[in-house]
Image (tube, rainbow, N blue to C red; front, top):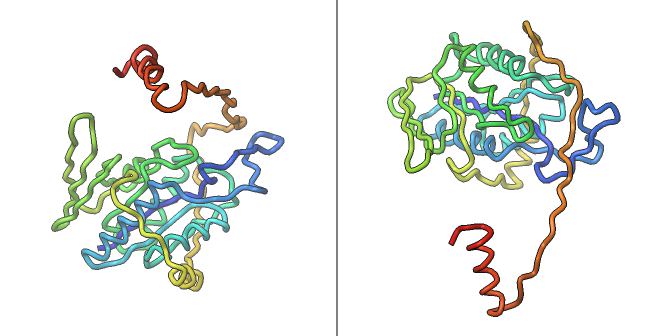
Length: 257
């Protein structure tokens, strides 16, 4: 079974975001990059499913040349192959991204769909628009299930479970299918130094996707960073003497008692 995990290069989630003077992009001069925890889980799930059922796991991203760094992380996590859909670094809209991924999926494998299972993080850690996996599924005419935290594959069928209040929803879909996963579906492996060194020697396939703007494309005007919120800490006391004050806060203000 061939599995494809799609990821995105995003700024470090704990980093301070600074915009360029024209407010149209992020100033990356002193910024680190990573992938979201959801996508780390997507890679881990791809590797596990490929190993369990025989086949290969490929990690793919659309982004600038520097995104090879995140692909090599996927290779170090024991993905078999990696593909970069090379761009100039400008942010692509979800529809453009989905069309490019769908074209690559068709090109990389045999038949109309080049993988048995397409895995995505539920949403990217930067834009968090939740659209790309659903749009890829629609473009490829595949079933799609999102927000999954448990996945089993049996006899060409995927059994996917989504947590809801008080229980879970269970979906059964025929493969090939698109599934977006959430953090907690598994425990992503930590690549060893040896695996990282081997990943540096592995060739990364590179494709130049056509950018299909499509009709009615939105135009980004500017980016804005959230306003900083000031917070104050109140010391309620020390040791046993603070118990009564804590109980009052939980009872009267937070209303959990």
